[in-house]
Each structure stands twice: as structure tokens, then as C-alpha cells.
Length: 234
Image 1 (cartoon, rainbow, N blue to C red):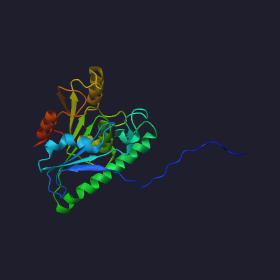
Image 2 (tube, rainbow, N blue to C red):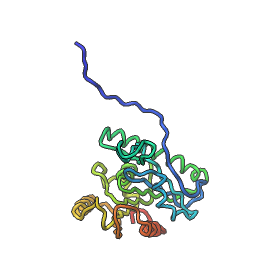
Image 3 (tube, rainbow, N blue to C red):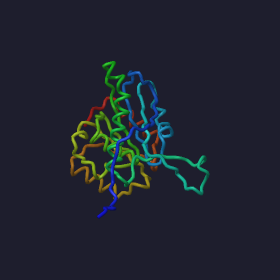
């Protein structure tokens, strides 16, 4: 009897990925920031928020998610005129997507940190995730090779599949940054998420600012300044 059932398979392929940088790439920066954009954004646009931090002492690296898509429908504009965004993952084949982007981010970090290793001058590493990038950053820290001194979770919380008690989170100082008018973060959700973190003795500093779901330049500057002299898990 012929078996006509379909079967799913996976294959690892080599592909090109894109990331954008600001600041020195010669191993002389004191801080290296990995900044992970939100849903529907592109790295070149996202990194502009961090231009005020480009003072010669920081290198800023904005990886772009591997999955791009048109932000508007077929009827909205011709293909050549439709804006494009990127997403770190969807619900489809999610575990493979997570594994792929963790490996990708590890590869970006290995390349960009190599000059520091050659000079013997390790920088202070900062990982910032915004919106969908918060979950991406959390999974990267939890299961990837990155060990940041400081982690900034902006406009989001740890995803349910990440254990707040995981050892990598105990070795990094964590700031959760939330806008007062963020349409995705109700007071009820904030209470539930904070209770979850308390139950796991998750240490963090909560930063609130007047604004919606976006990177506020003044608050970003304050957060960056607060890292000066700070130590992990303080």
C-alpha cells in the first residue's frame, strides 16, 4: 500500500544576513551595544535612534531580522513602492526560527568582538531589545553565547518560554523600560509580569517615561548614562 502522508523536513542552508553599525569597529570602543529592533522595522532605520550615543566610546550594532515582508497589501502600492519591514519570527516553525536567530546573533557578535579579543581589551557589552526584540534579546541571552554586562528590555517583557531564573540573567544588570502610554502594555499586564519576575527573584530596575511604544531619545540617554560605573546584578 502506498503511503501518501506528507512529512516535514528541515535543512540548514547558508544565506546572507544584514546588520548595520555605528561607531568604531577597530576594538577601541569601551562599550559595545547590540540593539535588536521591533516587529516590522529595519536595522538601518532602527539604529538612527542610537546616533546620539555615537560619541566615539561606543560601538552600536543593529542586526536585522532574517525574515522580511511588505508592510502593506498588494492593493496599497506597486511592489517597488511598498515599504518593507522585518520580523524575528512568527508562530510558524517557531523553534527553528528561534534557533536560527540565536545562531545568527552569535555569529554577528563573534565577528564584531574579534578586534577586541585581538587587542586584549574586552568592552562592556550591552544588549537592548525593543518590542519584539525584547523576546529575541531574552532568548539570545538565555541560550546563546552572549554574556552582556547590562541588558535593556524596552517595551516588552521576558517571553513565557524563557526562565527568569536562568543563570545568564544573574550575571547581567537588567533595566525594563516602559512608556506610560504604551498601547501594548496595560496596567494589568504589568502587574502580572512583575509578579512573575518577583516569584523568580528576578532582579531588575523598572524605568518609566512619558510616552508610547517607541524609543524615547531623552530616556535612552538617561539609561545609557546610568550604566556608567554600574556593575552587573547590582
